[in-house]
Length: 124
Image (cartoon, rainbow, N blue to C red; front, side):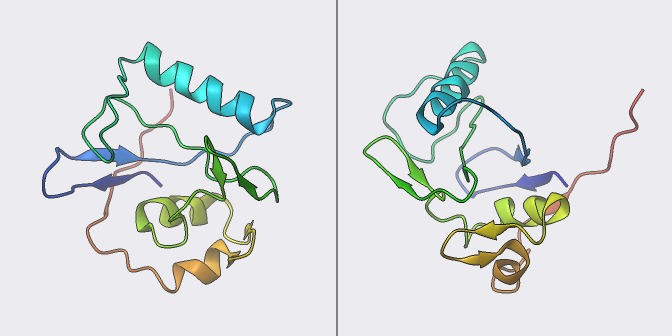
């Protein structure tokens, strides 16, 4: 599922989740994600939740709990963000969010209001 999010003060944007395997450490993976953002024109100005060209977040890293100045995993707010939980439930509904229960359990506490499902694209 890819969802369309529309905060009042920003243009519409698309949210999606991906599951991957890596040999990178969590911090190295964060570096790689931020490098991809930079290649797509993302400039980190210090403003939180402002408009941006691309936003790649490290939501989970296996069953790890990480709390450093640069990285918090599970991602803060993951349990309340419908634009994260609904797409995540489509690929891993029984995934355990460390310390918070399964994606399916968290979804019961998170309404889908303000999300719009995009039509699936046919692969060629």
